[in-house]
Length: 152
Figure 1 (tube, rainbow, N blue to C red):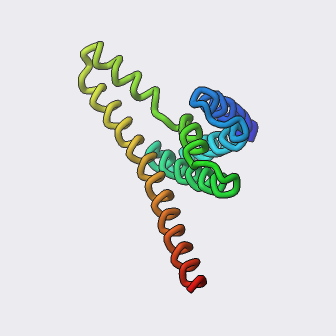
Figure 2 (figure 1 turned 90 degrees about the vertical axis):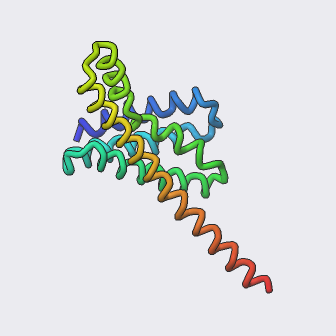
């Protein structure tokens, strides 16, 4: 349990750090940090269950996108101020580093392995974001049609 709390804390701080770096509004720091921290804890937890980095990154990205969408609706801010800093803990920087290191060391087999993993994790993250954002767009279209029907 303490492992999840420390993971949340460090992911929370790193997310807020990137929110500052990306010049997000100050009022969004706490919620962005919460989205990133919770997403990272879900990533660690689901990685222990599924033992798959891809599935864990997908699930955590879904949660971050849903939380970001909720905060954006409640606070009337753009969703990007919550999602972009929130996914930072999930970005596979270690894989990119090891891919480049393997290329420099001329170990092309390992470079291909690391590079493929990085690409698949990136696709999982972006796929989860696309799903949630598409569902929200569809929800908005339905709400707009309902409003138009009521006003007639």
